[in-house]
Every structure is written in structure tokens, then in C-alpha cells.
Amino acid sequence: MNLLILTGMGVAGYLLFWLIQSVMLAALGERQAWPMRYESGSQVMRWTMKIAIQVIWIAMLVLFPLTQGQTVIEYYGDRFTPRRVDALLSGLGLVVLLYLPLMLVRVATGWVILRPIHGWHKSILKSLRSLLTPLPLALMEEAVFRGLLVEQCLVAWGDNTLAIVVTVALTSTAFSSVHFIRRLGADIPWCWPAMGLLLFGALLAVAYIVSGRSMWLPVGLHAGGILVTQSVRPFVEYKGSGWLIGYRSFPMCGLTGIIAMIIVCVCVVLFFSGD
Image (cartoon, rainbow, N blue to C red; front, top):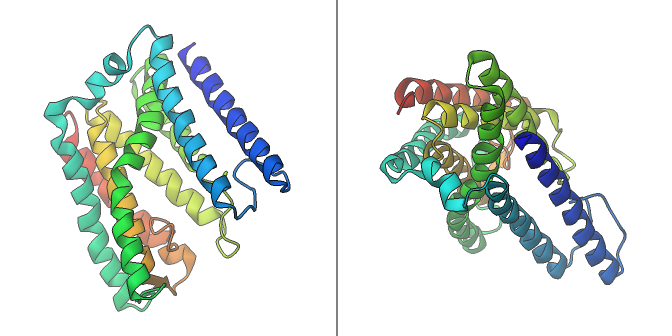
């Protein structure tokens, strides 16, 4: 029943977002489109839809606990236990420390070239601004995908091996899929980003489960992934094949990124199980 309620909320949120988008496009006199597929260059449109996404996600985070007879603090309290907050820094540090040698290899082989894409001044500003978003974005996405979706799958199906495998597979597929509501660049095929995001979603689900269904470790890993992606993006130009090294916006994709995520997953299982 809980999964049906959560699914219904997700569908309702998606339709509400589409309605807001349609109303805005009509008000601007622009062509209608599928959700997140509009071509409007209006800043009003851009910021309205950004705010709409955050409001809808926050509404889901608040309303679902109420359907269970709990407050937000009661529902998420155990998942954000203060004594486990050190896992946040551990997860973030693990991703950053593994990403640095991976990037050095990519640069040394010529697969990636370091240069300011937008000129030094603008690239530095973009990089500094990107430092503000990893933690809030990771908290929001982890609360939805791990705190709600993974948790409710485990509640519904149990925590035996088969249930955990099915939960990880289904929730990581959902996590990967939502990233493709927005159109990718014309030069980026969907297959490698989809696989990379699928494995990243699986890594975050595993981190949530093995750390005792605590949010701190997956939030740290997710924030680390966003940090290394956004902070260096203004300074990197990808020259290698996408299947090998991924793309500027999806550095976890491609063979080298997949190997890196497998290493992170092994470290998570070895060092954080039963934490």
C-alpha cells in the first residue's frame, strides 16, 4: 500500500510539473512540449521550473510521512541520526580521493585536456558557484530515492537477499530514468550515461542499506559525485571516446568511471557494513 501511495505521489507530481510548464509556455506564447523538453530561453521560464521541481519534491517529502501518521522529523529522524554524521564526510572524501587519480590518468593519456572553457574569470566563477549546490541537491535526491523509495521497498518486501537485489535494481533504474526527462546534448548518446547513472544509483542504494538504512553515507557519496562533476566541468574538455571516459556532464559513465564506481562500492561494503 505504501508503495502505491508513493507511486501515486510521484505521478501526481510529474503531472503537476507538466501543468505548470504548460501554463508558463502558454503565457509566454511559446510551443508546448513534453516535461523538461521545452526550448524556451526565457529566464522566467527557467527559474519557474527550477522552483516548481524543488517545491514538488519537498511536498512529497513532507506529505508521505503524514500518510503514515508520522511527522517529517519522526520519519527521517532515524535516517539522519547525528551520531552517524561522520559518514557524510567519509562518503564525500572517498569519492573525491578516487576521482583525483582517475582524472590524472585521463589527463596523462590525453583523453581529457585541462583548459578554461569559458575563459579564466568566468570559469573560476562557475566553479566557485558549483560548490554551493552538491550538499543541498544530494540531500534532496537521497531523501526521495533512498529515504522514501528504497526504504518503502524494503518495508514492503523485507530485507532478505532477493528483496534487496530487486530493490536495488528497481530503484536504481528509477534513479537513472528521471535524469533523462531532460533532453541530453545532441552529441551525447543515452546508453553510456544511462548505464553510469544506473550503477551510481545502485551504489547509493547499497550504501543506504549496508550503513543501517542511514542517509548520511549515500548523501556524502552523492554530494562527492556532484562536487567533482560540477567543480571541474568549466576546466575540462573531453577528447577520448565516451564509452571509455564518459562526458563532461557524466564523468562516472564510460568504462573507467564504471570501474571507479565498482571500487567505491567495494570500499562501502567493506568499511561501512553494519555501521
